[in-house]
Image 1 (cartoon, rainbow, N blue to C red):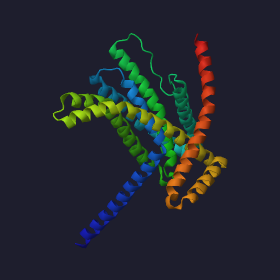
Image 2 (cartoon, rainbow, N blue to C red):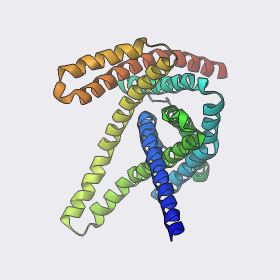
Image 3 (tube, rainbow, N blue to C red):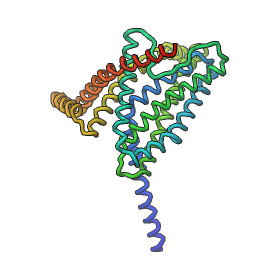
Image 4 (cartoon, one colour):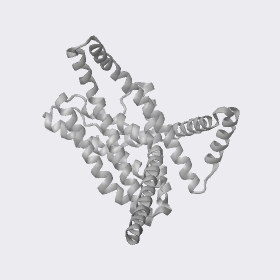
Length: 319
């Protein structure tokens, strides 16, 4: 009997440790996911454009193809690469984060520039030119373009997530955290995309076939609400890219020993937080996010003409 009680006690202890590990994994994954918010929102805002113009019956199959490739890239290619990077070349993580943060700042600044000038935005999407192709061929091109864009954003997300995990917890814990992030973000992004691309169809069906006046009114409201929602999503995504991109660069530079921006923003945020003691935490976050976003906009605005020059030179060279 004493042996059985000892065994049950050991099982309970193991279960307690396992539960604590699961909580730790989920906690680290949540914190790392928040760090990657800009890239995640951008991914959700960009992808619906790839199914635009296709029959309604093809929208979800296209989203599924992209989601499946995204999960493969994260789990089979990027996760092992991130673990190897963390184990054998951790010194490369801050420079890579600066590159990723700079890319987010560039993309956010270019979106603002094109919104102000009403020019077409080619920031992150390599959309194939519309040509007289068969529907199957056009779909294949669109899916390849979406997977390429997703791979870039996924690489940013996994690098940011790796930097946000506890390096001293060991590679097993890091692998578990990155696995949870990869699955959760893929499901969240492409689940949201599926809802977005089918929302207007659902609204039309309700507006046309709803059994009650409320159902038909709801359908009309959904149809009218989708375009403004996409506009809001784009604005929020742009702001998040600048804020998160600036924040990533500031912290990466801090890790490399360059503390000018980090100390200035931290000091300014502390001053603003002290002005409203009743909402100190909120004010500190708002001040930090605002200053990170302003820095991101300035850096992105400096990168836009440089990349535009090289892109223009390449286009001339092609002719």
